[in-house]
Image (tube, rainbow over all chains, first blue to last red):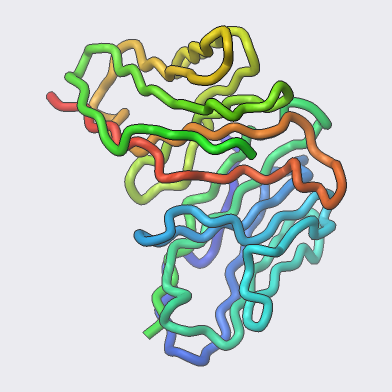
Length: 116
Length: 117
């Protein structure tokens, strides 16, 4: 089965350290989304891409978060420096935009980040 | 995107139909209704979506009222593995637009469905 792959699955780090999370979207998909989930806020959209171009990253704290797609098979979400409030599960999702009826996204298993 | 209202939680007996309601009274004519679910510790999973007509797939059925202001997701024979948070989302079909804003899929709090043995 084709699936979205995220690494690492779990990451524990100390405040101030750089964290990079990686996502391999499903081959052939042209949209990629990054979500963050916490108990308090639920699922929050951080950023998304279409055909590797960033469309909206308004959900991200700009001073410390950055999202990129170096190529069609890799999306990255970087936090530098990390803070305890960044502790959450980060989900990557991909989909195929045909111009109509988009909205079926395939999510990865998530990267659980704990910042001490 | 239009806002949706769902009950916080529901219970269902195993083997019975689970009917999950969703209100979206401000839905626009070009907005679809999507349902996703999230089983504990997993990523959300797409279930079904529709515009006006009722839809059915191998997972569930989606019933949309004629005025499109509400919908019901039906799991015909709920199993213990269907225990999850179910999200109802309304979203414009298609992408593009200025800034690509139509691509956003915004999740609310959802309904925690607990299927009991």
